[in-house]
Amino acid sequence: MTLLSRQNILHGLNRLDAVARAEGILVDLAVYGGAALALAFDLRMATKDVDAVVRGKPEFLRRAVKQIADEEGWPVETTEWPFS
Image (cartoon, rainbow, N blue to C red; front, top):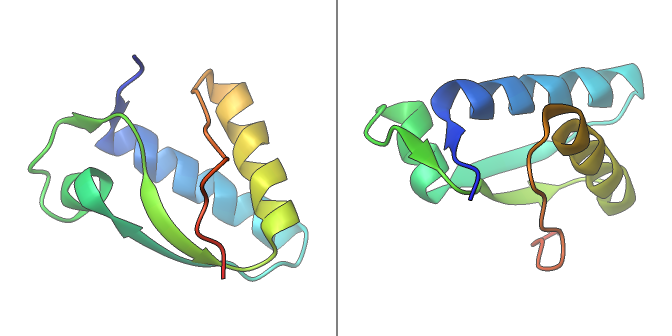
């Protein structure tokens, strides 16, 4: 099982921001759970996933997240994403 550190999470979110900006797409994202604790309080050293609620273009988000995960060698599970 791959664990994502605080730095991994920040790197992934920054990469998602860069890809979205390059394509002129606005993404509204809220992070929850262990990833949120790792980002806000550094209470967890790592988490196995990033729980998030996302508002934006689902097709772009699936493609961008898969691209970033593939580049970084991270697993990605996209079957139950809460897009609105």
